[in-house]
Amino acid sequence: MTARFRILVTRRWPRAVEQVLAERFETVLNEEDRPLDRSALADALRNFDAVLPTVSDRLPEDVFAGEGLRARILGNFGVGYNHIDIEAAKAAGIVVTNTPGVLTDCTADLAVSLLLAVARRAGEGERQVRTGTWTGWRPTHMIGTKVTGKTLGIIGFGRIGKAMAKRCHFGFDMDVVFYNRSRIAPEEAARFGARQFRTVENVLKAADFVSLHCPGGGENRNLIDAERLAAMKPGAYLINTARGDVVDEAALIEALEKGVIRGAGLDVYAAEPDVPARLSALENVVLLPHLGSATEETRTAMGMKVVDNVTAFFAGLAPPDRVA
Ligand code: 8YV
Image (cartoon, rainbow, N blue to C red):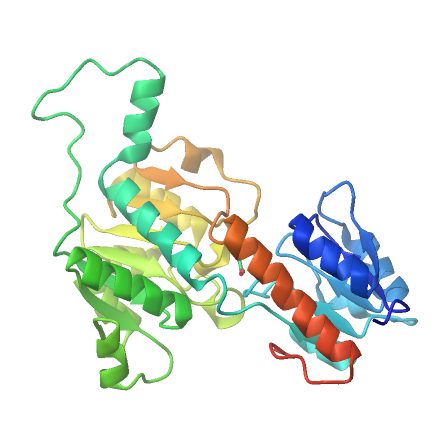
């Protein structure tokens, strides 16, 4: 196809996807596979027709400022795009696309894994076995919390929130309630075994486990702050596979240290890849390195979705997953 379009892939992708890209475009890969800094990204916008960023690339307003922009599309590898200043991209006439749908199942699966792991103290237990500090079975050893039949509160009832609800209601017999900005028809919510509550507070008050599935950035920044952590049931757990900035991380650490909530399962952090030492020092947390969509199948499907969007755009068609 159109080999004249120059495309920058900012990180290494699954090989199969890189191959398709190379067949269709003049593709440059970031061989070092390290996050690009501000000036490298600003240069990329001036030297490539398309830049394909990931969550590890920060594209704030000032990257778009100034003359000589060549890029016409940002094909984001991921569904969340709060690392890109969408208004600035729009103002610069750059289209932005994302990868919805294909990572729903794997991200919900990981949220379930975190929920189970923190409730049943899997991380702590694994550390004990690995360090040889396990002294043997006894009735009161490493007692956790039963999951089956408990109440799950979901914040954000989009694709991933729904997939989480379905797994937990039909798999673990949980009573699932959720908060969502817009109203969801009760029949639709019921398909996923869930009921909508009007406020975040009502969900927090009811839930034994709270799982976050809303976008990051904007009005969701610090949505779960000290006050809302205190509004959770004593003994409740927080699960976050959405974005780190949805939670006030300092307030979360304090709540965990003081036992305001019982534990947390986290896949995302406020300033990735930095994880505060006070957080990793805690036993009542399970910490993963942003693995929500990290399966062979899903990462390949995400890449192929980016390819579809960019291919459509350069063929003069509407990209299927345009967000700006
Ligand atoms: C990705 C994600 O790993 O899609 C998202 O929003 O958080 C993850 O699935 C990451 O964003 C890749 O850019």
